[in-house]
Image (cartoon, rainbow, N blue to C red):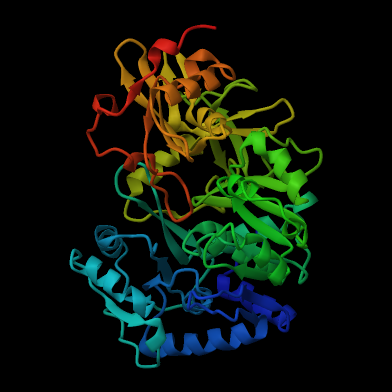
Length: 540
């Protein structure tokens, strides 16, 4: 094993955990009521999981699945996904999880692009898959999870000879871009184990205790956070992953107490939803030592920690490189969007559009690498069937993250926004996230998405799409929101246009999908219901 544990396989890491922690809990699911999904709850030890994985492995092997094959899965957040993944990876088969939110065209694209030999899906998802098959030229066999048996259809082509290595693909995860088709990130077995090992080595307030911690993660298994980061961290430390079917604020505290969670995962949107609930004793009836996540609004960070009784550790990572950076060592930088410093094995630069280093405290794009000698070590293997996009991301020997950050004199990195969410108005760069964060503190704002619109005089102007809680939309309310901003941020950052909308589309992980708010080619300024607030924007 190396310093980042990237020279081993998923199967070897799991086997080592079973040998050491066989009787310890591995996977758990909270109880539920009326949802028809493991209503009595679920928990399985490493030893029992290993027996089930071995049985699944034998079935796949007997049918001819092995090195070089891909199998797609549509299993939601069920523990069966983890067991099948471990079985398939042990044979050198790459898993391609399907987002259950996908519609027919998206499924068709995934099938044609990744070319799986087989799809394992919940029976209830069969019709959804068939909708994708109707638009796809690649139509592998479908096996319902409930009907899984030794009579598996054989793969269309034979497996490659040999055994899986650290470089063998373990997963292909499709990233949700704002434009164009999603890219398939190929993640090797060594990458996945290294991601978990990095989490296990964070230390400070985020130190995992071998065979003692229970990691509650309500995020989707078909994304890197739950399906790789926390899962592999649990495996390399002999801890238990608690997998809820999804985040529900009404069940959050009850599930934490019931499952005896000691670590929780969050996204930024989770925090205001929890803070918006009526305070109760349940908020302090848990055993949580720390929460780990990203995107908590600076105005809410300290208040949430005080109210809930545990630190919210902000981290940074992405599907292409999920050996996370974290602000977990005291003194932390609470409420500043800080997410850690560069470490051995994750070197970082902050650069301008021409690739030149920017001064401390100045915003620029975060670029990263392992080291000058081995820049891509521990990173994703590349974008499937898109070498051009892979090399573009790796230009100049550094991976370009697309995230705008600034670095303090102490080396601490602070998140600003996605590079594509920077609005350029009259020579000023405006972070959409900053305006969104402010508007979300207004008591009548439920949801908001800020984006640029064209402006003939100033290049771009700020547009805020706003979902109100209960208040009635209208020009008076729009003026009040602009004045609210003008009192708190520089005048040029305030919205010049406001559009009250009934809802804003989000992904399965509750990330706002700005690119779906307006149909392609739409100029929002031409919509009858949009409100022009530019006359209010004057230097104060």
